[in-house]
Length: 199
Length: 199
DNA sequence: CAATTGTCGTTAGCTCCCTAACTGTCTGCC
DNA sequence: GGCAGACAGTTAGGGAGCTAACGACAATTG
Image 1 (cartoon, chains in turn orange, yellow, brown, blue):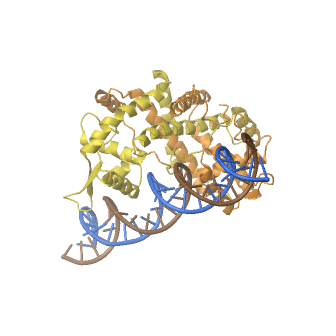
Image 2 (image 1 turned 60 degrees about the vertical axis):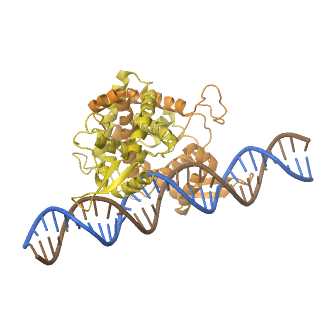
Image 3 (image 1 turned 120 degrees about the vertical axis):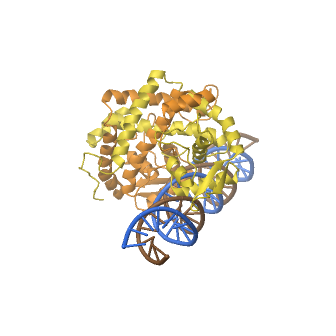
């Protein structure tokens, strides 16, 4: 659904064959890499299908979930991250939490506001800022939508045993960490880039 | 880089907490699901970074790899899928192989042709069809680009042992199969489709 | 042989995300 | 106090994917 491409993955023998021409090609690494992208895309597609049926995009859903934390600051912190205390409220905080640019967040909030899911209010203290809040309509929507969403993901992961899930999470966490290390060049020497990111 | 969102994943305790309010939420399933999306996105981003540096998008790269099979039909079938015999040549075949629509493939071929990577030629037999072929420039580009690309994926997966990679592939394959079963129409069981959620 | 049906490639218009640049506001340093 | 710089939110424009519809052609069928 999103992107990525590649309908059928190459067979392992083809990778072995190609490795003869390209010595840099590690067959088992390539196999794991391709399966990761494919499975991630498949899982994403399942969830997106669910969201589309309710007329909401991944991006908008993510914003709603981030704001949900602000509405219920105590128990149901579905997105309770490591260092965060209160839920995000301003577009800039939401953009940081959703890993999109502020410009993108403006567009997401625009459509969410147009559809009556959020309301923008000017910050009384700092007049540069806006405060974004869920409307009762959004609260109602989430309470009706989330159970089905959870059942979908539970069904998808239902093919794995509890132990397999733990193993999967462990391996994926390693990969994510390595990806982060490979993207940020000077991870060890220059911590100047990530502002206030306690990891 | 692509989409998906969600910077920091929720802690497991938060999932447990949320499960009290949403009985349908399976904490370990949600954890595995979120980590899968996150890791897939991270891995995708690493590769896309590499491609961007060479001024080529994922979609265009995928088309080049599919056509590469046509150029070298014998050994270096990097994308050798299960049932395919000869490499794809027409836009429709490429669209099927890349899992995009024919309309999207038209755009991809447009830009690839503009940049001199492929050439369109009318099919002499069936005048509805076009034949797409790699240019020598594309061949040269791939031979220079691929080794670095393979090294990148090998480095990313280098954090896993050979056994871990096999385990990962096995688990991901299960998930992909389940996703396919959930997307395609009434697969086998579960006629308890809760699709109609009153909104 | 003519008509229907289906396929191929393309176009037009949409969504979602991005970057770059802008306006308004706050802050810190003389 | 006043001004350079930083920051919040927005706007404008672009890329990549989608669907829906089209004209040209082929295949099937009466």
